Length: 187
Image (cartoon, rainbow, N blue to C red; front, side, top):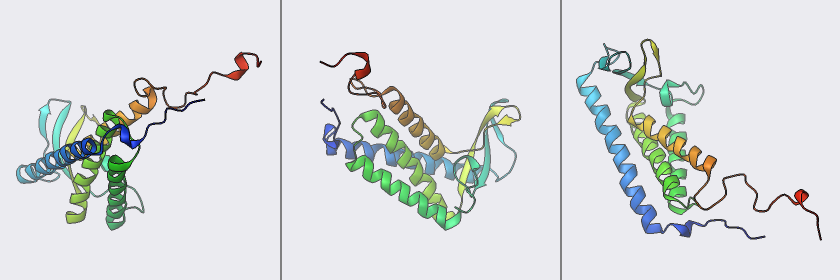
């Protein structure tokens, strides 16, 4: 029986660094700029600005919880910031030195890290995060979020899809390397 387990050498370290140094700062910068623009031009908890009638609007709120306004209970304030920093650091190490061996997975992880650092920055400096994007139909809306939340969510969905469908030329996660021996007689 042979195993085709990938190693981190499948994608060169320089490529990992380039991808990381492009995507993580890009997500962080876009998140940072949009939050500062919202703070400059909108009133916190004020009247929303309609983008697409009945569907999308800017609604400036402060979020002391985690993504999409979820209250993490005991995990708040500095403890939440410490947890977020640990996760961002662990994912950074995994992107650079781990076994993620394909560009879509690395891209997804970089989006998650960029989003994590975007919200961590606000949490460390202000003790809260600026959220401002609200979507839904009329009064049925998704919780207000920001660019960092979008990056984390898109990255998580990309990773889930990669795990679900597998990688080109390889079996999806959970498939066996050999056929079921119960289907054929032993010689």
